[in-house]
Length: 403
Image 1 (cartoon, rainbow, N blue to C red):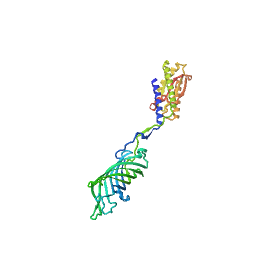
Image 2: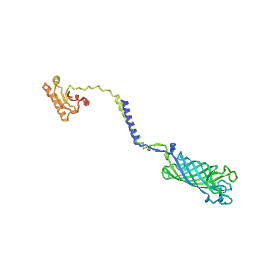
Image 3: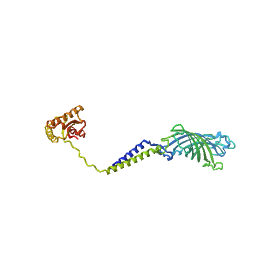
Image 4: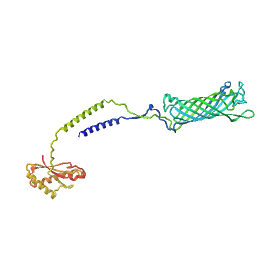
């Protein structure tokens, strides 16, 4: 019994703690201190188309007006961001270079007038290029999905085939031809990009390129140098699939409430448990009282449903009971009429109880039992109350010794 009492107390306390926990709502949020979740390889791809201008700074270009050295350029890239900071792109680039050179220089335009003793040159460079990119805005200011402006620094290299004007017999330009010349370029620049939607960006790309001036078929001292070109591009970028980045999600519990009230409740529960343990010890130490024998009814007369008349067997039983009563004239008896409450209406059951108990009462008096020994009553409950399956046990009259 002691173990059962203590277990009940423990269960009650545990249930209270569960209710307290359920009332505290746990939220799940992204935690920047946990780093970044790397998206799958198929996410964060982009394609960029650029168009712009470049200016070439070769050995003799100072004698040519700067405005006359401005030439068109265009690029097409496919790239991917691996993290919010680091990415890469690869693509095809084309730029037209206007410069100055000696007679016989690559791309020389013989019909153009000489300037400062040099001839104007023009050549086109086309080929693949690769860049590694770093988003400095995300690096230093933190990644924000809704940010409009981003500043990206990049460095890379490319390899170009040179195309020059094909000249007719008169020295006039007649289309383009391959110069059978390959050059390398190393470049660096920065991109100012503006998000106009989650999918689209516009950008301004400013770049400086170091171009290999060593030509495959010219080896003069004036030609074997590395030259500089600067470019400015306007670009349009389309971003594919998942375009955002996320931090790991962690649970955030609400701040702990003041625990003084809980401590007081715990102390009260401890005191209550100690009191119950004391009562339990006192109960276990008390002497066990002698068993009291419960008095069973002297007799019980049972009836079928909706019946109150006595059968021949019932009369024989009551005659025997009357002899017992007459032999114990100092003992009084209580007769109680019962009916089951599962069938019939209240009015019918009230009538059955009265008719049943009155029939037994009259039979006993008829058998010579003094009325002073008998008390007739009814009970509106069920005698056994074991359920509808056992209602036959509730249709009866009980005969008991009065207390």
